Image 1: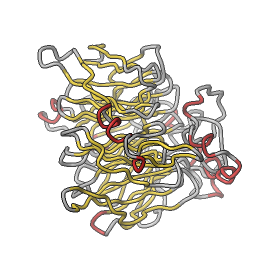
Image 2: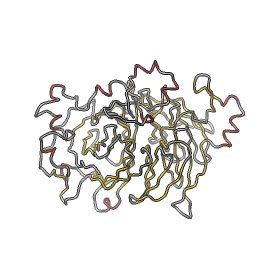
Image 3: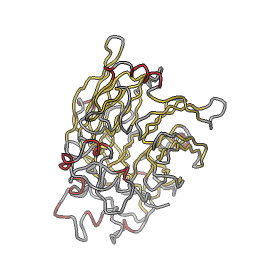
Image 4: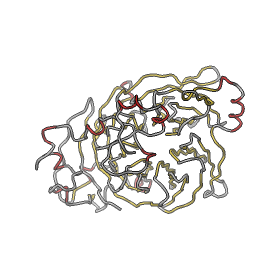
Length: 464
């Protein structure tokens, strides 16, 4: 996800060339994977999460020097790398790391005690208790998205195809390919009518039921009836899971669609490299359904790279290539709630669970945010990856919940070819956690828009 492209330079790029790359972010390291370039504007390098007070960015007592992200600072925060709760157990801790040298990790999906990982090796691996359980090969380009619905697993690929897999009822370690979206039957039937062809590039047409570029994201409707696929071809396609049919193609954006996520009551959110976040609503029309645009939540120069909706559907979060996370409140007709500043480089992935929000970034870190109303506090910064954090998946830790601790198992996939597994508690750190140094908490940052951000302590900072 690397190298930098100024938004203004888009005009000088051929459409096909620009659509073949992901949004770019700037970095000082020599990163070689061209597949992960990210569209961004110069704002990505100009805006820092610490720019809230320009006159105090340096000096012994400055927030930058006192910051837990500053590993060279001669402060109490630079000494301890462990943060313990009252029982001597790490509040937010690294459980383990999964490494298989076969490619960068592009996608994750978790269900129960199983974890599915997709990489640029074209393989989907299944892990159980941090051990490889089984795997299957797609032969359809790198795996950019994975989503699970019951016994079906859907995978989105670089070549624009969506594969459907089924778990064998006799042997849960066996996964068989059940088909491809769209099906060969539907492709054949649609190809007969010239009206089913649409222009996807200059002098190039394709069937409207097929993606003509990489599938970047998959999402399920709240009732699990529909599957949504976002693509770099600037469209969102809607699939009816029961019969594997594409029932609608939405010309959603003016550039690659990087994220799609479903809310409640037929509401769908989409984010694009064109810098916008849009809201769509599913409506019944005759025997079918159509999606109508409702509103545009965000218009900006830098690319939108990730979206997430919290479990209750009350909050929508958007990550972008400038390193910021914006959020909106459903109860206020999706009024802008604020901005979370916690990353130095692009936000590449988001996940929400309980009252927590997780943001993974090209700066190799994961910020853990706790929400109280519209106030979001950065509880922890999880470090340990040697490359940008590309994807996240979260599952509830049922054993901890049974003991009275609301705890989550967080999986993070990275371009360092590893998946790390974290245990993260939702308990208030100020009450249930102490630093080994007994250092005072960091000062809160000023509010952004109508929301607030306060910088919390990093509870875990260990490489594995």
